[in-house]
Length: 466
Image (cartoon, rainbow, N blue to C red):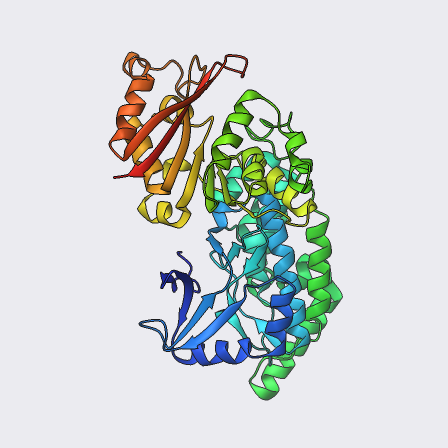
């Protein structure tokens, strides 16, 4: 991961670790030994770690994750996920403040999900004894408040806000209140209200408290040369929490967000005993039959959309990672998990298959990979070659790849009519030849008839990686 506070994440001895050195190692070790760590871990706000000195090569202290934690980049969080992360950070900060600790820095890369998709915070190297330290509101606003408020006002900007990872307060205000921003710029107030520890008081409308706190800070620094205490922190955090809770993100609707609207995915996620009642159709039965025949392990659902097949895999006993580039669809999957109290082991994320490199394929590699209703878009819309598609799929697959070839598809390149070369190349034989370069056993499964929208689908099963 690319965050300074999480760049020491590494896989070693078949586990995920965080490595720490020097003073950070001792401080984090002391904190993990405290009651507040136990409280936050039991509240499922941070991962459960085992701390071991001199066990992780190259580091003084190794923190071993004791659950199936998936680190995520900020750009891999849907807006509903980002909102839940924001609320989790505020809860953590409130409890830290009560125990005389303080979170000093927030940045992309400090987050991830457990095996059930719950948001967990891993930026524990940024936790210090509070003393006179103050909550990093500008960081919080950049990572959470600004992008969430922008998208609540203009849902069509969800993709842009997500890919940007963070949006600074000044940038946000210049977009939504350009005249006021210009006035403050002329008055030389922008830096104070955007970057000072008191910016949160301004942005939550607590102007009198802001003036009092700023004056107290000035007097205290003049007398002691040190920052003043901030007894108003918990009140500020609660005000921010109210603001986050009031944001409506339901307007996010990208191209494929509603693709699985004909399925009751919420019930599929909640119904432990009769979940098969929510699965109908020849195509669905084919996939269930294949998954039932495999040894249970990890499952990666590519192009998961709202998570129909992800939920089926989880109900069958797989630990599922659900990826899709449509953040509106991942929003709906995440809300289904949230409403079902994270009953199923599904870890959702917004990830574009086209952008997966070797590092990413190792992060998401799973025993079984589903790539359904997917490869024709990669070839015809995204313009990837069959060899590129097969190479990435093989890199993600440990044991079995379950994919398909869709006939008579209406998918087309973004630029319009597909070229004669690509049209001539869109043959199942071409796809099979590329898959055979990576798998020793490539066989055809069942053929779904044309009743499935857009034409029949030929199931393809690949195993025996070369």
